[in-house]
Amino acid sequence: MTGPGTKRARSIFNAPVGEWIAGPSMLNISAREIHVWKVDLSQRAVPDANAVLSFDELERASRFHFERDRQHFMIAHSALRIILARYLNLPPATLTFGQTEYGKPFLTNLEADGLLFNLSHSGDVAVIVVAREREVGVDVEFMRADFATAEVAEHFFSVAEIYTLSGLDPHQRPKAFFDCWTRKEAYVKARGEGLSMPLDQFDVSLAPGVEALMLGNRIDDAEKSRWTFQDLHVTQGYAAALVIENVQTPPRLSYFALTS
Image (cartoon, rainbow, N blue to C red; front, top):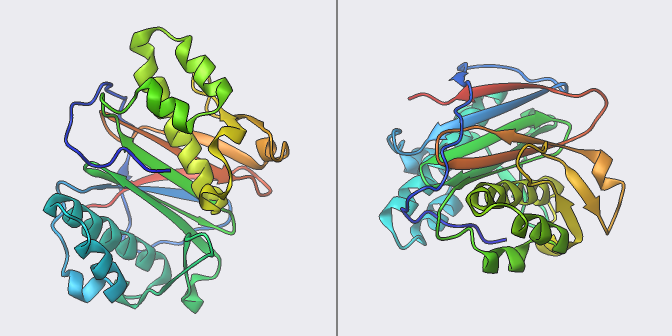
């Protein structure tokens, strides 16, 4: 599922801003907690990338055509290492990652002990979610007015989602579009199976005033009860969603901002 990208454009909606506190320099996380981190990519200086990022990460960064996109990738992935290192009490450069067959990254350090994470970044914002022993997925998108079109929805959304979107008042559609987009993307990332699951085979809520949740799944109906959906209010002009695997008791969410 290709994202709207990082092109500078005017946002079409000003979302309420959530409460985020400065993240501790060292901390633990239990299986009953979810930690969500926000990173302002426009305010942070790029760390010494050669000392923090791996050769593979530096090579991936070099592929970006625009310098702004390259810098944002490097800041986001450096921030991911810095944050995860706080849980493991290790230097950020010593973290090692593997990938599933579908490309979802995971930590291979022995100290990780069930620590799971997911990263998303768009425009000037990155969001990182950290959990233990439960799958999570997150997506953040800058709400570009030129992306929330019926043509894009017809390509990525289900029939039920398109029907709901088309029935809304025109001024409601852009926000509903990005709510749908981020919820679907976060779910796909939580499952960790990429686009092997067709996007039109499950439905998420998107109508104004309706809580974030999965409404239907034509591949496996049990998926509706397996996951919890949560909207995130990161900053004005952005939509974001978090999807959490339901394991035992509902988790307690904490919201942190990575400060320089």
